[in-house]
Image (cartoon, rainbow, N blue to C red):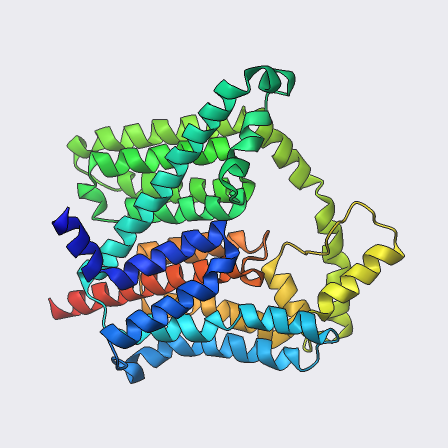
Length: 395
């Protein structure tokens, strides 16, 4: 027990970062508390900035993003709402400074990844236990509902959003499947990734499942590139598992209903008026922070589109372009794609691809849980890739 406590004490900072991701996923109001605690830990444990001039090249895209948001705030029609949005984006200043202005060791980065996967695993198992308990204590009620009710109920038992937790599962699998050389991947690691993947299929978040299939297709493709015959067993096992995942997804009534709804999703109706507003601004200027939502709301009311309860575009690229203009669009591209110029790291490439797909159907960087998730996870992948590059250059 003392050894475990010592390990967590030595890795207090990365442990707090992981807990911050999942605490804000379930309880958004805890975000300011975690930021305050991280600042205190950083100040008392590290006190000075480490390698600031070298790390500035990773920090400035976050600062540029915040600057664009802050500039757009000057043109906000609803000052109070604009301030609320701006407040969420303060994390783009605080968290990158705390994360990058610290000297990270390989053991700390490994601890973060391991602890992150463990938390995802625990939440997944706990939610299944809660679902089983709910079923056993409400059998008559469940039998009166349709066959997809339990799948719908699953995320609501712990109070997490399936889309956001689904992306956390995808990241956990990226960590697992790229944790070592693909030739030496442990069976326990492979089985853990499979459990999370099948759980994700049952949870049925549409975009996350697509991202998950991409990760597994990448894994299988790389396994087939191995020439040693004795490695084929794991490859065949992975292919069969992926085939079963796809089969279960395509035969799941709940997933198919959600998939068909996405084809005729009424939210996409809002993309056209958003595009016209961007066009009216010559594809350069933005409406101002929060003003795009006002314009879309007016469009909804004018056209009596009662099916829309909120004016969320569910597209971060489009939302950025509408509110922040061309430079807002460039800012998000810098955040997601710029690290790929410096590193040829498989985990970083997979994260950039899956996150880009995810924000095409969800405005992750508009809510605090999405902002915190992206800043922390992307930064850890960058730091891992940087450490690996340094080691390779030293060989």
